[in-house]
Length: 422
Image (cartoon, rainbow, N blue to C red; front, side, top):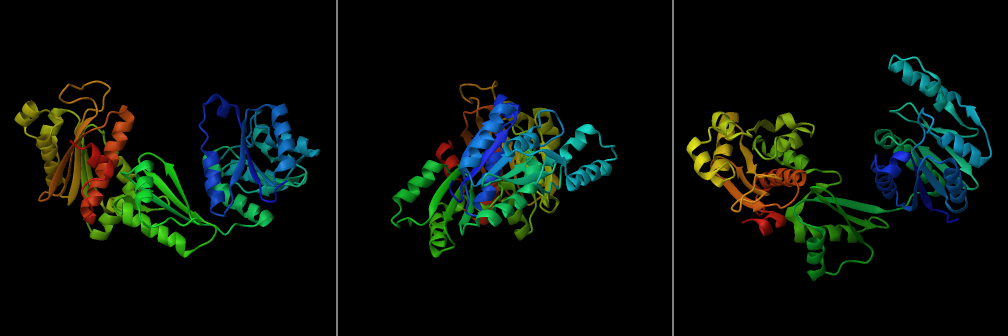
């Protein structure tokens, strides 16, 4: 058994069937990395008693820590407490603290606890409670053959609330690593391009700093990790700022909308959106962030040409002669939105999201964007040959980033769109 090995056991038939997508293991790994620890092995099993007990017994022989995720609920297929007790050669007992938690959880919701609810208070003898601030099922910790087993619920929101205590218990058992980590959020540049720029740079990358990428949609996360806080990490951050700085929108969990909100707030400005093909997604991304009322003035979803004309004042003759997906139309959409809202800056989009509606001249994926102020407006046409949902996400993200760039005086187009713009 390695002194610091951490294993992860995920349980549930829904994970095996694909009905539920596993996001919990990523959440756990990210929480552990803040303490310099990582998961060395992950096993996912359905609700099969024999296989689960075998996995528990095997982990007890090789892992110092086993985080068991799932199977703590009130139903018959929630087997974690029963199986851990069986593997430990002990019995289930009514845990007073867990019983009190379940009853208080039910009382707060005005319901009488039934047998299924109270099942969650029966835990292996000798187990200690891991508090669940959000759900009815507490987690528990127990030693099994030199392995500390920490059980957690499968509901992501409940797991997230319990992870701080889980990590504290792990640190108490095996210590915390002295890791230093910086997470940078970027948009408009891919892993290969970012890596190529680093490879071509004259400055050598220090061996003590690990570079990692985590691709998402619409952002790319770049992570710098070292065993301890050091000047090398700061130097690597400066290197990234020099090479791809205009693509870096912030640290940690910063989003495009959050970054734009921050800039708008600092400059005392408000924005507006005029959307066709994105159906209000840009406005939704902005208003999903807390504090949006201070910087977001209005969002117009003008899908039909008649609404573009009647609501935003787009010229009817222009719509007929140029089509809705055209530079004159998005310019007029933005002008109308700015005038009607009184906002300082905004973005307008009109495109062909597909899968139908394209022509030889304007294929599916074609989009026109207009962004800026009444006196300083810019336009861009590009083609994004992807599925409808991805098209809308990319266009919406680009709309936010283009405003951010204009406000900050950055190069007009991110790498991705400057390469595709036509």
